[in-house]
Length: 131
Image (cartoon, rainbow, N blue to C red):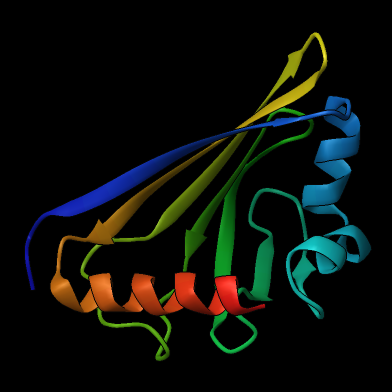
């Protein structure tokens, strides 16, 4: 395994106010609608996120930052369904009000710079495109 990791950054502009977007991210019934059926979340510091993002791979994360209406950070727990990683995988959702809705920034880090992870990410993307 490589000792280097990589990250990613996405920006999404949503035509809804910050509170609506926050509820979509943090209320279990809303999360299950857009993320995955059966998705679970307890949106609080020390809380838990659990979902099958590709309908096969179950991911579970510890919530270490939960600032309502502003920020939600997930630290993923190791999963037997994913290749091994020496670093913690992290998704950090940052919400910002905008004139026409909300800007959501997703900053990810800790993805191993390893060809085994390239394959995992490619399979995940292909499954998403097939649905």
